[in-house]
Amino acid sequence: MNEIKEWVYSKKNEILEVLRELVEIPSVMGKAEENAPFGTEPKNALLKMCEICEKFGFSVTNYENAIGFAQMGETSDLGILCHLDVVPANGKGWKSNPFDLTEKNGVLYGRGVIDDKGPATAALFAMLCAKELDFPLKKGVRLIFGTNEENGSLDLEIYKKHDKFPKMVFTPDAGFPVINIEKGMMRSNFSGKFEGGSLKSFHGGSIPNAVPDSAVCEIVGVSADKVKAAVKSDKSGAKFAVFEDNGIIKISCEGKAAHASTPKTGINAVTALISLLNRVIENKTLCGLEKIVPFGETNGKSFGLECSDEHGALTLVFSIFDYNENGCSGTIDVRFPCCKNLAFIEETERNTLREIGLCFDGYMGDEPHIVPENSEFIRKLLSVYERVEGEKGYCVTIGGGTYVHNIEGGAAFGVERGDTDYHMHGDNEFITTDELLKDIVLFAETIREICC
Image (cartoon, rainbow, N blue to C red; front, side):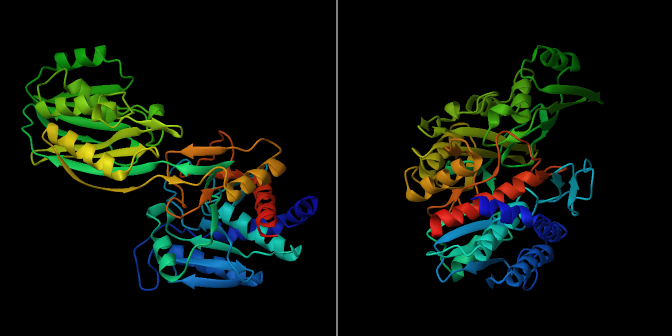
């Protein structure tokens, strides 16, 4: 492994230059065009990666300008799955140009450095390391780079039209040590008609897979003093503001956002505002919603969904709710353990919503994903982690889905470490230079362990 480390650290400048070339391409999903299914910039990032891989001497394949791969060896036994698309960088808190790679005090800043252009660069140089150090490979390696992970992973469907995934695949698009189990996910929609009465409008939440941090409504026929008294006695932790104008009372609610897979870390503004309204007005539907999704409950108990197994418990988030004179609509996000399936979640939600006069309108979702902890692949990933990181490796179950969720046998291996907030999807996204180089060592050692 010392030889690998020496090679990696000798290539530092070249590694940073490749990452710089990728970060400079603002590969946010755009309008589909001819020969560019996810927009011009994701295509440009893919073509740049293909160009770099060819320069390093790898055979390259490009499927429909959507997803490609670099191959080392005759077979494709080990796959490393990365993505080159990124989320927008519209935040106002950036201290540098998000599409320029900026290094300061050993920290690399730029959109994609942790998600997922940095890991893709690390995987590429791990393959180059194996090539230049002449690893005695008995199995082939395929570095796959997609361009639609951030918006549905439709690139993987295009890949499957043309090819098969390797038997062993890991994605460096999550965290260490190894994520081998991902809960199932259902994101469902509902709608209904009801008499609003005093309620004239309600809007809360905008992202289906997050705890909503804001909600606002308008009511009539109620005194402002009554509303303010209810706000004063509220114990939700949410922040309310009350405004009155020509007999219309507007109530805004500020909660705390959180990912839908960890709802306990947030404060749900939608359910907090519904709870407040039920203390100042009479509305059968709002009462029904509070009954099945009460504020503070995140385990789906009142929805009839509560369950858990050795890998964790179900979580539920009421993420979006809208009401106007035409009716209401909403979104529910559920992450469920391996002991349940989509059919159970769908039937239970449909029946529970029907009981309060609302209609289940359909869903998108995935069954749980599991790779046995005692499989040879997982054991080898953990072994490499322990050798390189010098600490005990272990398997992790998560509520979110990774890039390999629907790839049989796929696991997530890297690259976030511990509780570090890398500002993924946020302003000033970063990775340290030392971590990037260590990732290359990890991935090169993984290639050696599995393919030699």
